[in-house]
Structures are given as C-alpha cells and as structure tokens.
Amino acid sequence: MRRTMSIVRAVLLPAAVLGAAVAVRLFLAQGFTVPSASMRPTLLPGDYILVTPYRDQHRPSRQDVIVFRSGERASPFYVKRVIGLPGDYLQLRSGQVVVNGYTLSEPYLYGRGTSGTVMPQIVPHDCYFVLGDNRQESLDSRAMGLVPFAAVVGKARVVYWSTGVEASGTRRISPIAWDRLLRRVH
Image (cartoon, rainbow, N blue to C red; front, side, top):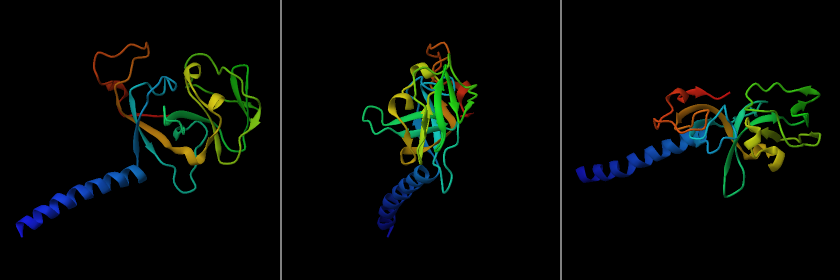
C-alpha cells in the first residue's frame, strides 16, 4: 500500500505542478526577456516582463506595449508599442507620427523623433502598426509591416526581474537592477 502511494505521489504531484504551470502560462501570464534596446527607455535589455493575453472582446489599445510572434527563427518574439489601430489613417511626417490627422504625443520616446518613411495608409481590420520607443534602433512596422491580431501574445504589464543596463549603456556592478524590479510597463 505504501509503495502504491509513493508511486501515485511520484506521478501525480509532478503532473499537477506541470498542469498548473501550463494553465498559468496559457491563461494568466507569460514571461519574456527583452533582448534589445529598441524599447529604451521603457524597457532595457535584460528586463524580464510579465505579459497577459488579451481576453474576450479586449484588443490592444493605442500605446499599449505588446509582445507578438514574428514568424522568424532568429527572433521569434518582438516587444513594441501599438501606434496604429484597425481603421486608423496613419503617416509619418517630419519625424512625427500623425494618426487620423492629429500628431501623436509620445513622451516615452528615446532620442529624436521617428525616422524612416511610411506612406500614408489605413491600418486594415485586425492589424496593428507598432513602433519601438527607441526609433533609431528598432525593427518595427516601418520595416516588418503590420502585426495581425493573431500574432499578438499579449500586453506587457510589469518588469518582474532585471539584469538590465544603465541608461549610459554600461553594465551594472550588481547582477540585479533593483531599481527596475516590479516597474509597471506603460
């Protein structure tokens, strides 16, 4: 009887833990690492972020920071900010983003305004135009095109751990960036 109980515990306990981990990942939150400086200063390389999926009728809003699948093997996921929503008339003019005739206020930008050209366009149904906060170092909708909703993993919510670099670009003395822990992503 004891041996049977030990075997049951050895099988059921790991199965229950694995099942709970899968449920958390699918329904509550998923962790991702920020690999590049394309979202500086909002997110730094070495930040670990929690991402929650969009549920039911909820869809990304303008200026949400999202994680999405790229379909590329080299970098399967990207983290960018939603700039254009389905139905928006969007263009880049004189280094600024113009959405539906209004210049978008972007206090989160790192450095100069938006570079590159994007011809005036209407964002199609179920697609999003995304840009990095560090526009000079960001591979985003200017080069990759629009992001379909089906590729969106979810919304970045919080930096739960960080081994990030300082604003100057130098590595920290401590392996943990304490000042970035539990920082909301907005």
